[in-house]
Amino acid sequence: MNVHRSHSWDLTVDQAQQLQDEWSNYVKVRPLEKTIKTVAGVDVAYDTDHQLVVAGVVLLNADSLELIESHVTYHQSAFPYHPGLLSFREIPAILPTLAKLNQAADLIICDGQGIAHPRHFGLASHLGVLLEIPTIGCAKTHYWGEYTPPLLTRGNTSPIQADNQVNGHVVCTQNNIKPVFVSPGHLTSHQDAIEWVLKCSNRYRQPQTTRLADQLVRKHLKLLQGD
Image (cartoon, rainbow, N blue to C red; front, side, top):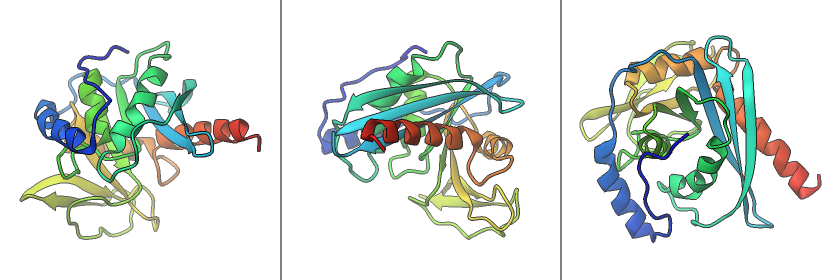
């Protein structure tokens, strides 16, 4: 999986925010243009004792959601935590992990925001622009914008609005379960984002891509910590 655009990761907070403002112009919100055969999930866990980042990727068959392959890499933590700048902390670990895939991902669902972000450039948008592949942000928690909670029935949605526009949707993936917060990352539409999150959330609140990636990094984090 090749990097289409690149930039320095040695940035201050102000420089990172400026890059988000500039690179948000590269984001394309539009319907998927090809058939999706494989869908990937990425996740990151932190070993604060050793200042390590554990990054994981899983690749699933887009139709059956069966696991095709998975990989984990370890990295030194560099960029500090700062609200709205998660991608600068996680993507340097995610990119080399994605590079280990033997088969290309047609779509990546990220555990984070897409354009539902103050600078319209959350983790999913950042990753999508770097790789020039379709991405979707599916976060567990609300970060930015206003919405009316939808009825907790699978398939129900409610728009997330800010700056007089729709930036994402609150999506109920299961009956009577808290919703998730979904937005296009890059090269996907709002409808694509909703449909693919629902398709991949066939049994649980979170997409299977996120669940398996989360389980993978947690397992390796425990091994690293000797638990």
